[in-house]
Length: 288
Image 1 (cartoon, rainbow, N blue to C red):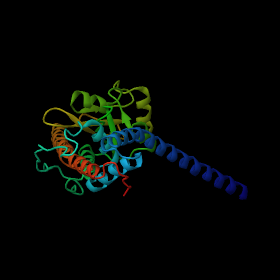
Image 2 (cartoon, helix red, strand yellow; image 1 turned 30 degrees about the horizontal axis):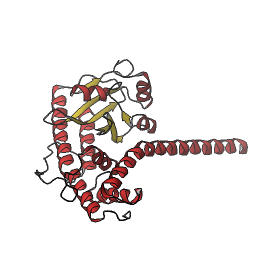
Image 3 (tube, one colour; image 1 turned 90 degrees about the vertical axis):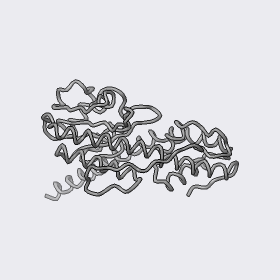
Image 4 (cartoon, rainbow, N blue to C red; image 1 turned 45 degrees about the vertical axis):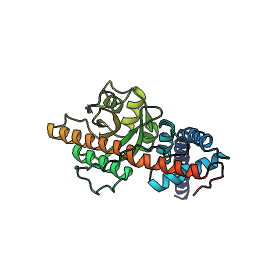
């Protein structure tokens, strides 16, 4: 009995150590994906404001990120994809016209905070899961630098799933097809649907998903700014017309809100960063 208990304890320790190593590996991969982007943005800011080192450039990003509740990676995206200020000592966006925050009509367990992108994406995910009647799903946003989709929110999915689908390109998944066609995509049976690559299919099935439904988050002009997908532990029948209309309305409202956030909150963050950079030009800027 004592020997069996000892072996059981050893096996439990081994499992815990294996899970710790897997978590550490996932964290390192996430950092590796974000690091080149942030480093590029630091280089742009060092040159633009004649900063003495990369740490000062990071300080600019960090302070603006925290003040406006914009993720550091998202802010770095914006620095790299937004045309530089026309006049180095004037406002970055001198002719900008501000618009009010769009209303969101769809229900959610907790009303999103005003201007809070993370809260809105959580509400989008909650609404989608409620309509499809499942507890597994994720939200992705468009990667402004590379294209494709970057995972932002998830629930009920395995860590291996989250790691594998942290970024998806233009082919090989239902969400990629929905983004390409700007239309909802239903996968009735993950095991047989040709939309997936075999590697993607294997990861989805391993997470316990047998069916899924993807909804693009689109602007009035037809841009896809994100994607929400619901996963089910059973094969999925066609959604009703009412379900599809509800999800279509939500996708349009969420896309309009994300567009507003990019044109308002993110640009506020960039303008603030620009003001800090102008004032601190050539000087060391400490992290907050």
